[in-house]
Length: 519
Image (cartoon, rainbow, N blue to C red):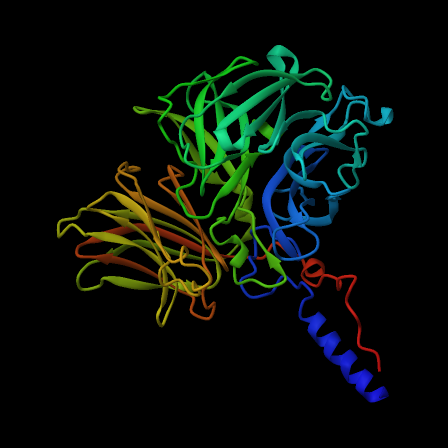
């Protein structure tokens, strides 16, 4: 019997040791944020305070499926490397902690801050309290830089007795000297705005919507000012997630009402890929930057992704800009410049010709974590091509194609042969979006590859597309190609990108339920 028990312990130990997060699991991203283990969805509470960028997120501490919603937490000093912290706000008394935002109450307007923190402020986290009776807005506070939170004794702070009333984003509006909260009435495609001077008592201000995309529930609203590039004016941008995408509106906000510049039926999409949702921006980011993070996923298959130990990843941090075009104001997106610190093993090409004699070239770089910037020029003296682009994770019967269709003026990402896709009928697809402007006569594709994702920033961020993929990582060649004509790649730069996880993080301690082998 003793030996039977020993053998049983060995098998239990081996089984559980396989579930210990290592940050080297199959498909685990190297520089997109993922929690050490378990389920993650929406980013929450994005805030800069006292030298740290805070990333809170929807988290299930009990498994890799959605449920038991709590707020996970990580911090960064550079928007690239993240330190995992303990669960910040766990579910309690049958109340799940749905999405929301965080602010620094620097003047202790709420009265919840430790008086010794004057001038620095405590963190107030506003979230949707999900209970069996519906959704209401609540607040928790932290006097130790978000490491621990205390629930406000008089929660909820707003309760309209509604089932679909959620996702509070709070920010300060200096001209009217009050705090603003934007929420969604999800099932009727509206946002509702509230105002407060003490962060605890809120008055209804106005509503906006329905407008734009109205065939899906609205979620995760945001509202913020943006200076227009090369102009001395400021516009206000509103985000709402709807269906598989994040839409945005551009207009004006006077502290009470948001007025849309465009026709109410115009739909402006932030990211045209299949997998970018719940985007929100940081409060109080340095240098007046408007920085965003989105959940790199899609509810159509989020619960079936073929990952173990962890499920769900966040986008890289993006720098948003606003420019005026003939059609109106539009958002451009860049990867934050801090990501360049991850670059290694540079490869450079000048004036690489693709034609019928040489329709494709395999680049002298390969891997699962890459950054590629390629500038294509056409037509040349020969034939105009029908399409051209870059293929990654190339090997026998596998490729992910990022390209441009010359005939339809569409940039696209094709993941129909990208690897494992049988977990969902909705996964294998080719996504396209019209992009008929050029940058100095060129089509530029700026591509980030990270184990199980592709981020495309085309023509300096005019079009952005994010996609999950699940390839065989041993098939990792990079190919540039052209079909049906002549293309000049005026310049290509590529790098491998290092992991953001230090050795100590990559070898995380075993979870508390781990049973060591004892003989």
